[in-house]
Length: 160
Image 1: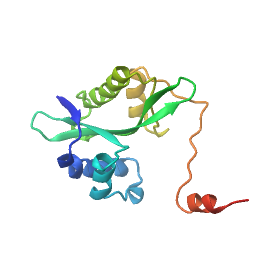
Image 2 (image 1 turned 90 degrees about the vertical axis):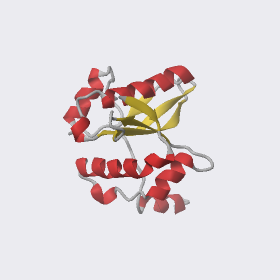
Image 3 (image 1 turned 180 degrees about the vertical axis):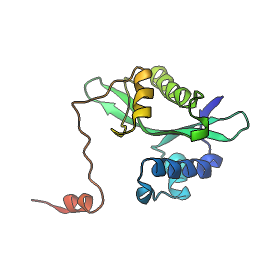
Image 4 (image 1 turned 90 degrees about the horizontal axis):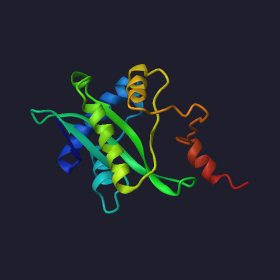
């Protein structure tokens, strides 16, 4: 099993897995990202998105993790926000997800980052069990808020 940083040639396969993840999360209609957008975010002039892939022994991609930096004003250090971690169904239970997550924890430790955070859907019991087994704890007292679609430009223009 190999986990490595994404390279440009990985973009089409990762985008395919993003579509698989969207189907799993019952939100295919929201998965509108293109190859060009993912490539630009990861490999453009000022990349702010980073990624790792897990390779199976035959060289096929078994899974991926995409992440970006956040910052803790409490701790005074950066952290990693894991946007998505996905392992193809045929590779689940083989350690790929654990190795992807462990690799990001190692990046945090090596770089002096104080947190590795992510969100998980409440109904996704297999993922919740996996994360708990890694020692992660839910932030039950926090609620995620999001501005998107019409609400985002609407609020941006509201100068009351």
